[in-house]
Each structure stands twice: as structure tokens, then as C-alpha cells.
Length: 390
Image 1: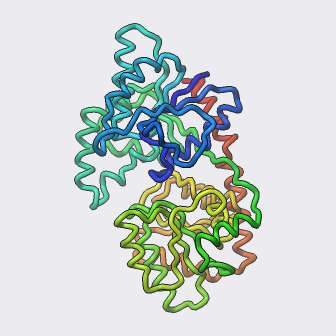
Image 2: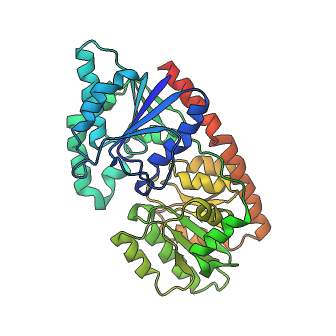
Image 3: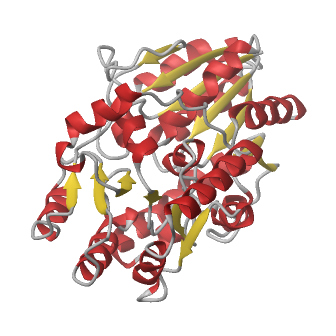
């Protein structure tokens, strides 16, 4: 079996989709499957990561739509060598390029692979309803009518990562009539075993936190992630609770929004910004926190959530994160309802009533939920089985 993944970028700073492939591909390769990627990255980009699979880097696209005409030519020349083409994400040129290439090959009566689209949450109605996204929502309606509807409805299958994502996707746009929809799940590679060097690497990035208890937010510092809500709730609790664990916010700091959040937290000495954490420092942050927090307005899956659970840490998330029901079912954490003004602050406050032993027990349940729902072997085997059934 030969699989080609089509993705805009493998840059980890742009979110979790590329991490999905870095979790999935090594297991597929272990099963004897040939896996390659084509992306719109510069040929010299490696992002400090040495992947064990081939990535064909076509070059940057133009505008936010990522238009890159070289991609169609590359697909025309190469796509017949694969059994499956899996397109990751919507609303950018790689999806249209794949559709055009497959359509052209069919007209020429050439061998064409099966086409799978993985939206990764991009059909979630949140993106059409959020007040701050009105212009983008209008753009999406136009692109849906002209392009994406045809791509979705002509694909051989649409793969989702959880039941909630699949359910919500059917409610967003008119004319949504895919040939086949499947929840294939999503798994992560097990984290490396904890050791002292992880803690030291994390302390090097955040020396102020040494020997202190802390809650961890580790994600992009973006309005969608609810960072402002977290800082505001934490600030309110800090004024009344001297025993409140510190708050570590880990994520890239090179955006205007990140700078706004640093200003919002500037008067609180218990809030620490570390910048983006990778490798040992990242695992040190996970393994040594009391709980992982992600009060997001929308999250299709949340790889960092599951990484925290794999490190035996309980998680505080929201009902806007599509794996919330799995978290509740497994007793792996707490769910805040952002539609209720005080919910996040109240749930955070509730954490203060947990003893160290009770938090550890909650962490064990989080780990058990990871093992039963989100292990890479289980989800990757389902992914392979589903591909073969298409």
C-alpha cells in the first residue's frame, strides 16, 4: 500500500495537523506501508525535526489561500504512483489542486488513487458562527459553493477523528453529501519515559517555576484557545487564594495576540510565559504540572490534551473541544461551559479542593482513557482497515 498525504505545511508552529502525521506515519511505516508527503514548504525547511518519511516540498504558496501552481503539476506527474491520496484540511489550495489533478487523470483514463479528505475540524460550525470571523465565514461560504462542496462530495471518503466532529460537520453547509464518512479516531505516540533531564530542561526555560506547583497551558497563544479567559479567571482567583498553583503558558510569543496576553498577565507574578516548548522541555512541563488546561472556543481533537493524559495528568477542557465526552466518560478531567460566564473560574476554583493524592488518581484515570481511546496502535490499525474498505 502506498499513501500520499497532501498538506499545506509541516511547520509545527502552525498547529496540530502536521503532528497528526508525525504520530501516524511511523506506525504506518512499521506495518510495511509506503508513506510520502507533499507540502507547500520551502525545500530548505526542516523545522529542526528529522522525520523518517519522505516529504516533497514544492515551495510556499501565495496569499492566505496558499496558491501554488507547481502543486498541480507535481500531482499530475506523481499521484498515479499511489493507492491513496489523503488531503488534510480545507479552505486552501492543496484541496483544489488535488481535485483538479484527479479529475484530469480520470479524463485521460489513467490510474487514479482513492481520494480521502480529513477536515481536521474545519467543517465545525464554530468557524461560521464566531462573531470575530464574519469576513472569513463569508469567504468560506463562497469557497464552499465554488470549490469545497465538489471536493467533499467527489472524494471516496471523509475521515473524521471523533464522533462529535463527524456529527457537527453535517450541520454546517448546504449540499453536504459525501460518499462515505467514517470516524477513524486519532492516536498519539506514547511519550518518552519521564526522567530528571526533562525537568531540568523545563526549568531552563522557566526558572521561576522551580520547585513550585503549577497548572500548564501548552498550545498556540491564539484567541480561539481561550487564553484571555484563562488569564482573567486565574487573575480573579489569585486575588483570593494565596495557595493557588502558578500558571505556565507555553506557546510561541511572536504574534501580536501573544504580546497582548503577556500584557494582560503582566501584573501577576504567578503567571509565566515560556515561549514554545519542544522535546525534553515540553515533556518536562507535562510531567511536572498538576493539571493541563485548555479552555478553547473550538478544538477538533487537541493533541496536547492527549499528550498530557499520556503523562498521567488530568485535563481541564471545555465542551467546545470535540473529545469532551471521552474525557467525562473516563473521569479524566473537568469540563467548563464557556456559555456560562463563571464556569471556567468555578472549575478552576474546584481544582483547589483536590488533594495531591486525588489529583494523582485523576491522572491515572486520564492515562487509562488515553490507553483505551487514543493509543496510536489502536487508531492506526482502524485507519488502515478503513482505507482498505474504501
